[in-house]
Amino acid sequence: MARAAVPGRLTWQSATVAATRAETATARTLILDVDGWTGHLPGQHIDVRLTAPDGYTAQRSYSISSAPGPDRLEVTVQVVTDGEVSPYLVEVAEPGDQLEIRGPLGGWFVRRPADPRPALLIGGGSGVAPLMSMVRAATSPTRLLYSTRSPSDALFTAELATAGAAADGLVAVRHVYTRVAPAGSPVPPRRLDADALARVVWPRDADSVAFVCGPTGFVETVADLLVGVGHDPANIRAERFGPTGG
Amino acid sequence: MAVITRGFGGRRRDDTDLPPGQYRTDDFPVLSAGPTPRISLDDWELAVVTETGERSTWSWAEFTALPADEPTVDIHCVTHWSKFGTSWRGVSLDTLLADVETAAEYVVAHSYGGYTTNIPIEDLLDGQAWVAYEFDGEPLVPVHGGPARLLVPHLYFWKSAKWLRTLELRLDDEPGFWETAGYHNYGDPWREQRYRAD
Amino acid sequence: MSTINGGGDDAAWVDGNALAGPLGEIMGTDLTVAELTCAGCRTTRPLAAMRVFDRAPGLVARCPGCEAVVLRLVRTADRALVDLRGALLLSLPMPTA
Image (cartoon, rainbow over all chains, first blue to last red; front, side, top):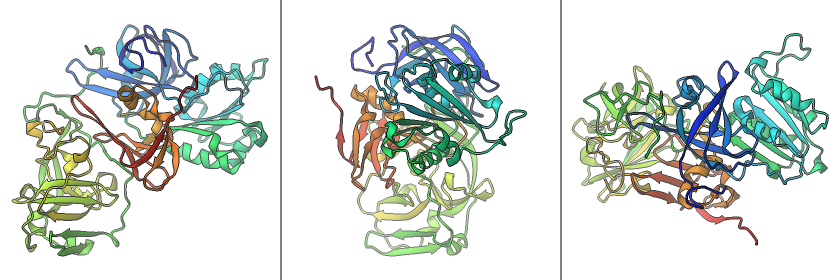
């Protein structure tokens, strides 16, 4: 968490949109250039502040979805109907635009590179964003269970397929679709349940850690189910992204 | 020096009848310092407690049988939004306090869920405040303070306590939830009394 | 204030993780990894696991066990106020070397 400005003091710094990448019809990734950015821990977030010409400001938090690296980071944003910041980030911002950020933030919902424990990552909707950073930076065995309404709502689909098929076998990816299953799928759409979790949860003696991120109700449900299938509650870390309005 | 973000529109500020530092909004943002209490109308009760401990209470049926007003007012939230022309139905504090013997100068509103806010009693009388139970012709929904909330539109909206349960009449002032955490004790939007030192 | 990557849920709170920026700005350290003991029910959890109500005039953190307020943070024009009366103890990890 070293800062370029005053050491130990968290300050706002300017970021420039370097590029954008559409992820779904309603979500996109913003690639931000940040001078002096020293990287982050997978799972961390940034605060984003927008200031209008009349002085009005709005502030939101967004998880970092990219692998750690210097001078550049990515956030993946799902547009929120009637939101104030997310429609700007998803529909308006262009390369060259400037905004303010502070971070990287949060030392609890993080997977440290030195941590050798296997991890189970469970994401609901755009809650996969910080888990994607963990997948991209994975150096120990990682399973991702990703719940979306339909295949077209899923973020990072192609990259996750590639990661799950890599020869080293480090990352395994499984999707759950709650409303619309892929064409030709033998499995009907269904909610993420204990059965789906039991198939991916690490054995009790594996000393694994679970990261759960998604809407508040999703995280509550998954955390309860995880304990139900035998996961140690002390090794479940959660990030709920709360109400709409972003 | 703040970075201006191109294309970020912000909020309209062109209305002349906005208090300083406010922006107009047409939706009704939900602000809350805690979980939304769900109170059944069978269990609901409104109480007024005087400085001598005298207690008057109304059940839901008794409360909604009282004469009601239908004020249309502008509301101003300390988080910088104002909403014009909101329509309510509620019982005037003049009605609720008409038969109450008191020398109190201050009132602390207590909510289901534990929230509190303090208001001088003179700001609640003479047609300035209501206990509202309908918004826009519909029963007041829980996220906006239903079954019933205080409505004191001439002060910042945190003074209009949601989920009102008790009005405690006091001889001395007792700062409430936000007033003890840096917000202004009185909260007049036209004098921009947001914070303690304003 | 904070909505991490948007969503479609009505719950009015987020995790204590969202306090990392607002508290870090004031304290110069990440307090979300600190263990906080609730004055209401005396249970201890990381600040990151508290429920934070962020759609309000300030940030209000509540114990997920008993819903008591454990921390309030208000930014005025020129000050930051942190009310910890609901917290019996904050225990922070420190580097050992």
